[in-house]
Image (cartoon, rainbow, N blue to C red; front, side, top):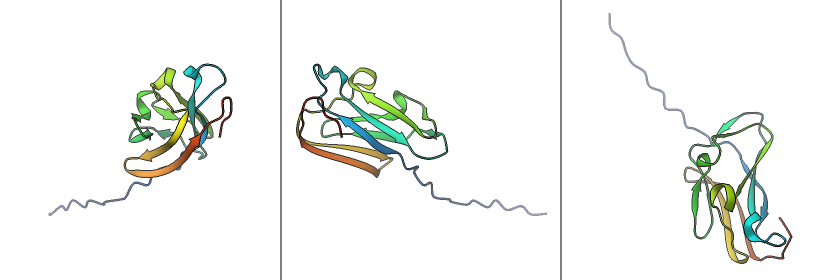
Length: 116
């Protein structure tokens, strides 16, 4: 009797996380600047292999949170992940799964207390 091992290579598709809000210049101190990420799916998404990038930094999302629940928001800030934003641009905030760009937000000038 012969046995064969059949390997199927199934491509992994990244879940569609979104950049939902960017606050680069909060009212008062810059200690409260942040990027908010949203999971619009009905599934828990493990944050391994997801990164948040800007012109000076790359952070792994799973070092702050291991996963994101369905229809939930997570905040990445200077305080919880050491992710820092520039008050003056140009700046580009990018959300990646491995090397696949999922979402991007660019700005040049910020106004104190405003978010996008």
